[in-house]
Length: 198
Image (tube, rainbow, N blue to C red):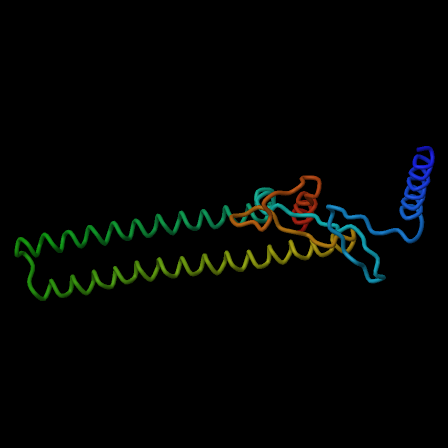
């Protein structure tokens, strides 16, 4: 019995020595981590540096964006009011024409002139609406292109200066990010740069 106990102790001591030697000697093995890593140009792994910009906050706090938004809203309201006035005038004239036609107080020649005049007015209203819509879309697209270009320029500058691997976009109607750590939000920095731009 004593021999069996001695043999077991020796085997256990050998197993502990092997585990100790295996664990604490030789090259270190990479430890699995939840944090994503990127391999740099030297082949070394480093933590991935990611920040984001919240587009909703950017729109809300950017003076240039708010200025253009107000200008477009005013133009839209002015155009809509003008179109409603023209439409009301057209409807009044059309009603007069219909009443004259029903009472028989209009000649065929006058009826033809009325129809031509009404047709031109209706076409002018439709043309005005289409032109206003097209112009506002073009102006909005032009501003959006410049605004996004400015954001990208500043994001690229910050990425280079601070060693970020990615600057992501968060918010908006369809955001690729479902959730974000607020400590990684650099939106205010971009807002300050945009608002300082003259």
